[in-house]
Length: 284
Image 1 (tube, rainbow, N blue to C red):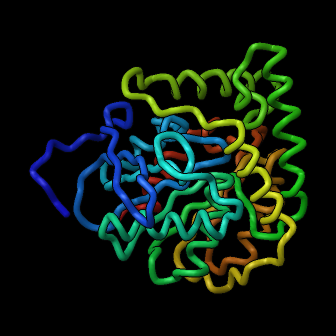
Image 2: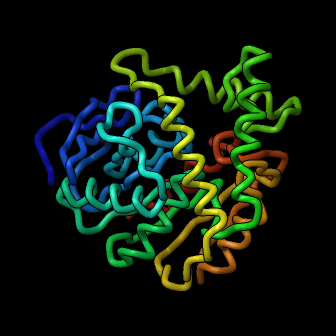
């Protein structure tokens, strides 16, 4: 799928596009050199296209074709948010195949990692390499407590006039506060053609889907035999860090990185270390 278009390697400059698949108009952005297998990014709870850390996206896009997308009913994508993550995985499959791909790599974070696992289990031949960050397995212990954590941190952010991600993703110590504010500022670097924020009703639906995921029977992750990189902080309150270890034990041959003194957004706090590791892992 190579073209004569100039290669864009900065996520801030990636053009907004849409494609119709399964009755949904999916909003997406792409950057990096086209041709070969793309890296599709699966985003977290309540997130839109503007919630990806440009430092990580740009590092991977230097050598790889990167695609980010809004899930159904989120941001600029049409339709309503699915009430299960299995359905979200089906949406992702429709989106990927509509773009014309039968093989991809995946970079995922948090809820995006839940969806990515469901996709790989259902379509094992679709994915070549898998990155799972800040996430855990279906049926993982305490995943269903994400609702209480999310609403509590939204409340704490509101009374301190902060971004909820500063509380949800980062430790409330000196290092964590500094990393959280820096992360939020990086997300503001794109100043034109920004995405729409998620609606509150859509957030509620996603949270209910995560609770179902957390309370359901585990998937057979022995089916995942592709190269897999797993990363998290050592004190993840949203998706407990022990679940990253659980994933590592269930996925044969996987690599595991746990960053110290960090939470759910450990890969964003340690982006200077993690971005080149992820880029190298995904390199062809």
